[in-house]
Length: 221
Image (cartoon, rainbow, N blue to C red; front, side, top):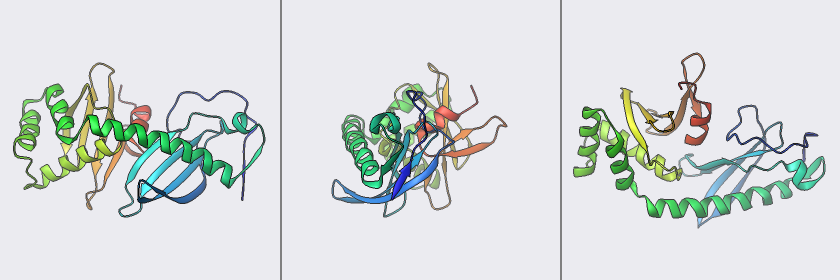
């Protein structure tokens, strides 16, 4: 199969998760002994957005923008599936290696402690403290919070400087970085699957592919 590229010769902008992308490829891969599904979208600057899904529960292991214009990389208008797969796999190997290092450095308790340190609301601080001290999942609220922490860790997201700013609804957790003035939300579905969420120009919540994409697209600040 052939993937057709745009005649776009400029270097890509540094924006992760461009919304005007189109899916061009989907394939399976075995990484670190686990089976995954890889979905590849291509934006109008020929930059692939690569999403790695875990096959057992369809959660996102990692997602990112490879940052390269494939037209400039391959110097042609048409590339094969194998060329695109090799490019995506190279990015995935490097990304997962970095994620493993981050996960080793910051475990789930470390993430909770960082949120506790930065959170200002005393009731939310008490909620986080309860999770840390007991590591208990007896209530559905603590289960949801634990799912959020696991999601943050799986994405390899650096939570340093972030606080759990608000829990406006039982299934929505709002995070805020006072230094960068950036925000993102995590929403928990009925099946306890966690999704990143951003607030659009109209004030409505929209699902994002990753925390990084939610931060880029959020319009609260």
